[in-house]
Length: 166
Image (cartoon, rainbow, N blue to C red; front, side, top):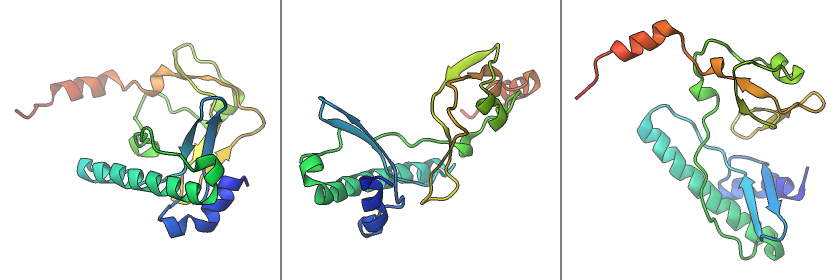
C-alpha cells in the first residue's frame, strides 16, 4: 500500500471519501498529477446521474483538501484543473454480437474486427470502497473486437422503426 492509499484508508471517511485507496499518476517536470480516488454511483436516471457527477466533484475537492493537509510539500499548491467525467462500466453494457471474456483478454486473443486497444488490467468495481486489479502475469495490450459493440441487424431494424417523440 502506498502512502496516498494509507492516508485515504486512515482519514478518507473524515473527509467524506468513499474509496479507501486509488491511483495517482505524477508527471515529472510538469508539476501535474492525475488522481483517481473517488467513487460515485452510476444511476441510469439522467437527473440522478447528473447529481452523482456533482457528488464526484465534491469528493475530488475533499480529496485535494486531504492531500494538502497530509502532504503539504507535494500538494500544498494543488488545485483541480479539470474534473473527470464519470465512467460507466458494467452499468452500460451493450448487448453485442460477442461478449469479451476474461480468458480472451488473458490469452491476448487477436480479433479480425479489432477497434479498441487497452493496456489496463482487468478492473472490478464491485463495491464502493473497493477496487481490484486482476492480472495473471503481464496482460497484453490487446485490441477489442468491434462485434462487442455491434447489435444484431434485427435489433437495429427494430430500434430504427420505433416512433420518436416530437
